[in-house]
Length: 293
Ligand SMILES: [Zn+2]
Image 1 (cartoon, rainbow, N blue to C red):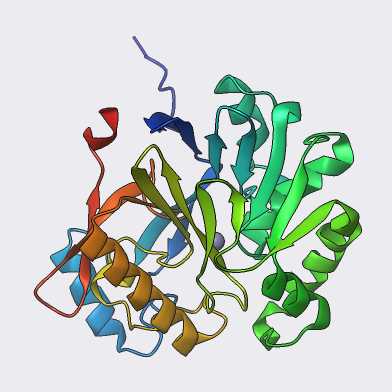
Image 2: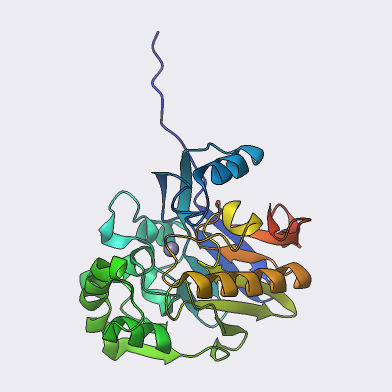
């Protein structure tokens, strides 16, 4: 007898309460790539990166990462943070189906917050032309929007990304609101300067009824390399030194405050704690049942 295999199954929706907020992480997709070197540890020897992977039970020449948009139901409104790959990658753009599957309706989303304008974060804005998210305003960092619009501080390697920004984001400018670090999206959700990964990359601090959480977006893009050696350069960081400075500042804050973080490219459900280790870096401690209480 032959029994048919069904293919891999991977969890893709995770929901919990934070004070009066209901938080949902959604896995828009997963990719496998060659690496982590030279995407991670670009300024190091390949052997150094292999050694770190091996020590952490990871393959040396392959890695996988997900794309994890976030939904916050504040009780008054539904806010989506980042939009995944959208139509840029049909295999990965699962956001729309998963929003519905999670019990929300895309038309009930009142705000879409874009942390930065790299393709895997703005791709889902392309659904707007098909009538999705019709009641949502779009919130984007002022520095981020201006940088992509003018091309200032956009490296050559992001030329195609700039064209994508012009195609996807600029036609939506009349629906946009611009935000600066330390300003609130709504009460309890505050923008934090995370500049460097992109010129105006923003993180968000989330607080409800004395419970806290931090959406770090792309401050750390590999749960081992970016955490354990935060000063190693990352190919995806548009300004390497500024990205290192932001990464170290935010990881240090999260380690000392013990506030859990959500990272857009961390292993799903993409939530964990940041623990200071004995070397000058940090360990990623994936969440288990801490958020059930
Ligand atoms: Zn990203």
